[in-house]
Image 1 (cartoon, rainbow over the protein chains, first blue to last red):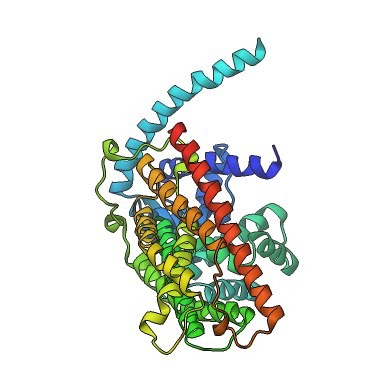
Image 2 (cartoon, chains in turn green, purple):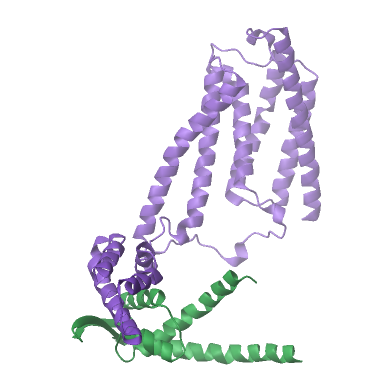
Length: 116
Length: 308
């Protein structure tokens, strides 16, 4: 498998998970850079070219609310989970846990076979 | 800072008017946050560092695309319908071009085979250009007006009524159907042209014309069969039997025509003896080709029926 193929598959794998991570992080308000920093500290690396447009898209879909606030001499746009976003996040978390529960034994099974 | 402003302006130029201010404002806040964080890490931050940061963010056009991805001209949900419509309309236009140019040719226009082919191509390209533009614009408008709630509905269907198609050869290609239709309509035109243009003579000898006129109902059946194929797009046993019948008739007629003088020499005054011989030889070659192709299709379809 080429690096390009691997990158493409990783991107596909990460796409949905990143939405989940962003929604979960925005239970508390964040502006773009502070959100990126929080995700990075949590071990989720995401470049600004992906994150900032993603936040805007989620806001356009009504999952996030936003407001401009002045701070440290300049303005920043703070995002936080909307009511609709909070409802959807609960359902997504359940879906994630179900998927995780189903996929993990499959992956572990493969690992066991490889080890044997 | 001037460099950041210019970068933001360059991104904004790539965005629709109503999005420029909002995205530009947010982009500026994000860039300043990054500069601030890098300043905190490195101590000093000069123009060269700003330049490196902006380069790492990407070309303004690419950044604009990530913020506001361009919508495709034709929505992906309409793409198959768009391709099928184009294919069918262009196929019909090709058939019409063949008929029109053949009419002109038989009407006494002095054109050689190369000019004849070029005339068909030119006529087809003219009409195809208009059709392509009209269809594309229509589908682009449909794509724009299409919302998630307003997705195109497919015809009513049920799994029970879907035809059995276990073999890949059962699927009939649109190109095959339109090629057949164009050939058949061309043949009908050649045979019956003198009837509605009293001033022109037929290319065929009286004997050959008599045979071909008796053969016309078979060509009519083949045309109807091709139109039916357009609807079902799948070979069934009954359609294969019909195809065997039509091809057998073509085989028999081509063998009979090989025994006769097909061309009427008087209608070829511009040709010398050598030219007439070439024309006769050409007609015989075409008849042999028709016989071979018809035989092949009869054998092929008989084998397919056994495999169904």
